[in-house]
Amino acid sequence: MTKINVCISCDENYAKYASVVIASILYNAQDEDFLHFYVLDGDISSESKSKILSLTKIKPCEIDFIKVDETKLEIYKQINTHEYITLPTYYRLILSELLPDVDKIIYLDCDTVVNTSLKDLFETDLAENIIAGVLDARVKHKKKWKNSKYINAGMVVFDLDKIRKEDIEQKFVQFTKNNPEKIETGDQDIINYTLEGRIKILPDEWNVQVSGFASRTSFTKRPKIIHYIGYYKPWVFGSCTFFKDLYFKYLQLTPWALTEEQQKHWYDENKKASRKNFWKKRPLCFLNPKYWYAFYCSYIKQ
Image 1: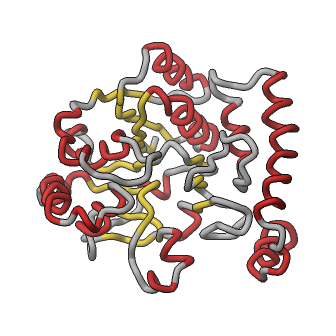
Image 2: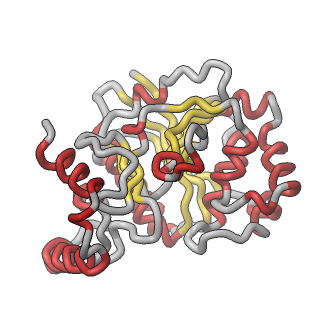
C-alpha cells in the first residue's frame, strides 16, 4: 500500500470543482494507492462537504477538511492581482503550519484533472530542493522568459518538512512585504521568487496547461495532469478549452453529475457554441503554423 497525500484548497464556490479533481484522482488510482486528501476549507457548506465525502465510493480513501484561520493571511489579502485568484489560493503558503504532521504533499488547483496514478509524482526525489513543479506557460511561450525555472503553481510537490525546518513560510511573508511590485500572479510569484534555486523541474506531462486548442504547454495526447488555466474554464459555456470533455467525464462521477437535460446543454449545445466562438475569435488560425502543429500532434501523430 502506497500512501499519497494530496491537498486541495477551495471555498463553497469551488467545492464542485474540487470534487472533480478528487474524483479524477480516485478513478485513475492504482489498487495499491491509498489517497489521503486534505481539503483546505474556505467556508465550505455542510452539504458540499457531505457530497465530497461521498467520493470515497469511487475508491476508499481519507478526506479531511482543514479549517483555515484567515487572520494568518492578512498580508496576502492586500495583494491586487487577477480577479479569479481568491484568498484560498494563498492557503498553500501556510501548508506546513496547517498540516504539522505531514512531511510531503502534492498540491493541486481546483481547475485541474488527473489522468493517471499519482504514485510516481508523490515519490519524486526532491534531493535538496524544497518543491517540484512544471514550467509555467509563460516560460514555454514567451521569449523573455527563456531559460527561466519559473513553475506553474497549479501543481506543486511540497517538502513540508524542509519548509518547517528552514522557516520558509516566514520568508514568503517577508518577500510579500518587501516586493509587492513583483507579485502579478499571486502566490505563484511568491513561491517562485522566494524558492528560486530550490525548485525541481518536472516533465511537462505532469501539468499540461491548457487555455485553447493551440495554447497548450505540451501537445501530448496523454497528459497526466491537465490544468485549465486562464478565465475560460471548462464550466464556462462556449469556452474553447481543449480537453474539456475530460472535465465532464469526471464531473459525472460526482454528486454534481449532470442530468440528461443538462447533458444536452453542456455536451451538444456547448460544443456548437465552442466551435462558433473558436472560429469567431480565430478566423485566420489556419494561417498559423502552430495551429497545424497542434492539429498534427492531436489527431495524426501516433
